[in-house]
Amino acid sequence: MSSSNKMSSPVKLLASEASIARFRRGLLGWYRAAKRDLPWRRTRDPYRIWLSEIMLQQTRVAAVLDYYRRFLARFPTVEALAAARLEEVLRLWAGLGYYSRARNLHRAAQEIVARHGGEFPRAWEAALAMPGVGKYTAAAILSIAYDAPHAVLDGNVARVLARLDAVRGDLRAPRRWSALATRAQQLADPASPGDWNQAMMELGAVVCLPSPPRCEQCPVRRFCSAHALGLENSLPAARRKRAPESVTLAAAVLLDPRGQTLLVRPAEADSALFSRMWQFPAVALKAGATRASAIAALATHLRRSLGIRSIKPAHLAPADDSRHTVTFRRIRLATFLLRVKKLPRVSNSRTPLLARVAHLAVSSATKKIAAAALRTVPAVSAHRPRTTRP
Ligand code: SF4
Image 1 (tube, rainbow, N blue to C red):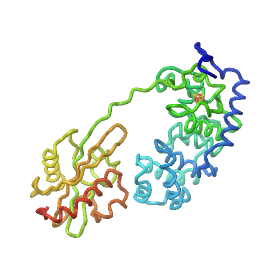
Image 2 (image 1 turned 45 degrees about the vertical axis):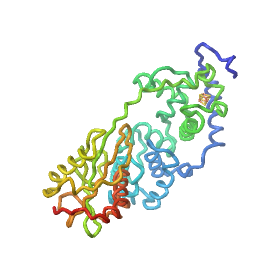
Image 3 (image 1 turned 120 degrees about the vertical axis):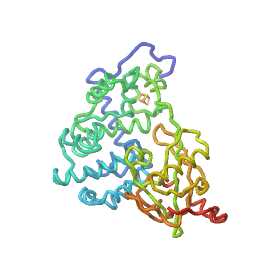
Image 4 (image 1 turned 60 degrees about the horizontal axis):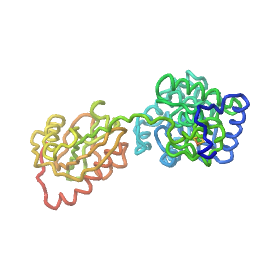
């Protein structure tokens, strides 16, 4: 429809049962012919579908593919995952981010084996009781694996629905979100709930993009009120984003003559930026902290937390800064190398080779700090800074 014919008053092109039936046929036909060939679409195994849905939370398909294959090669069944050590699960997850997903997956696998005979539960309430499984994920798994009639609703599907019905306002407002959930269920094809949900997700992922939507390629364009009204680029209304928060993190990479370093696992609140995984001793500072103030704060932290009483700011050799982003936090990682004759003995710590840190179950931030320290090691060796004794 040309912009000159576009209607200026509200329309609802998906009102009658007949139009909904045509809409379903159009969307499902398009999906079955044009869907991307993804490994989790070649199976009905609930374990594999569950794993893919967890990995895809907040993560792009392209980033998930290799992780999904590696994870299944090591843990081909829910029993294998349940029997694994958490450390190994986290190691295979390292780099994918949002590590609580891996912890919850591991715990849920143990519950599935212990209480559900090794099969992802079929009942809605039991599925929702699994660690890490919310309404969207439960609806996706149950519909795709078991053909259960639950429609999915997440940000992508909500965007598609909002455009189809020309819904104004903040979609996340509770009443509007609840109306969208009702609408998602009303439009879903009861004969093919799994394909239907995937078709809606696929439409949101490859055609009805946030900006701009590819309406000229859209298989359901004639049912779309936003398109008819010329509002496809302005709906849904943009959400107010949380203002980014800048943080500086000063991290100490201790290094002994054998190339070993110290990783710690502090209390939860202190280690949130490292996803509660092994990390270098670190202290958070206000954004824009000077190098001198970072060194002074880090030296104090090492004295208090590791008992390195003899440490002086001059012992901390600066390495490159790196950047890291976690949701709304923009983090400057200020890395300092501290050569020691002997690593301090502290509880809840480990002492791997610095060169091995990137291969352990650690967050991306810890890998960046290790890489910055490793780049600095030859330069530091050249002018031999003083070592300190714990
Ligand atoms: Fe989205 Fe455009 Fe299709 Fe409407 S016509 S559903 S705005 S891609």
